[in-house]
Length: 92
Length: 122
Image 1 (cartoon, each protein chain N blue to C red):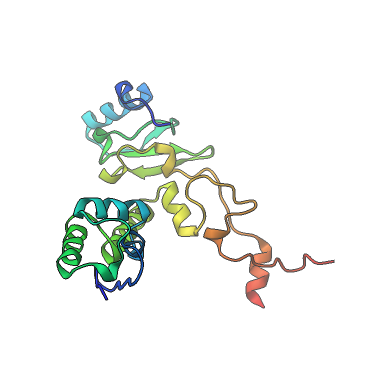
Image 2: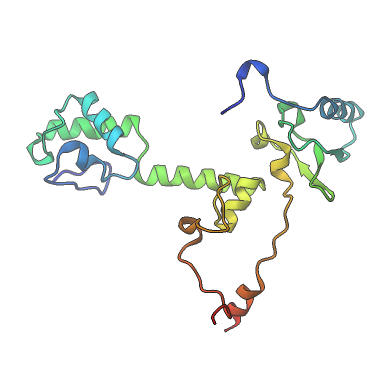
């Protein structure tokens, strides 16, 4: 079920604070965040976030198309290099 | 013979059924088209007059995206997701299910026919 509209989008408050701070300072530094569950808001466009994936902060440059999605969608948590069997089969 | 929305030539079938031969029109859309244009659903395509066919054609052209336009729209949406680098885009790139289905078994629609794994016999 989709989230009720009257609640507004969910964003962890520290993300908002950090984003505002970097906006004011004007420097385009990577903003490290752990909150993968936060919604990407219109005022985040143009900023670079380092979204934690459990191991490191993946840099994500927020563009207009990303608004409304969650930060976690841009920082994959799993690495998959394929199966060994697949490679053998291809060699034959 | 009736040409509606480009290449489609459905023939001796009932109008709502014949319209579903167009990519982007299913049973429910086809029925709504018949209602909008005022054609009885039990009538067949070869019973229609030229003006009725024209009415259907105009209704589809102005209200519904079909065939090439629809395919292009879908393709563009998929491409947008892939360019964004978001999770859904990654799944599209890999040709795996996008909406969180299991891939341990099943998911054959996206993965294609099952490939045998080398050295798994005996």
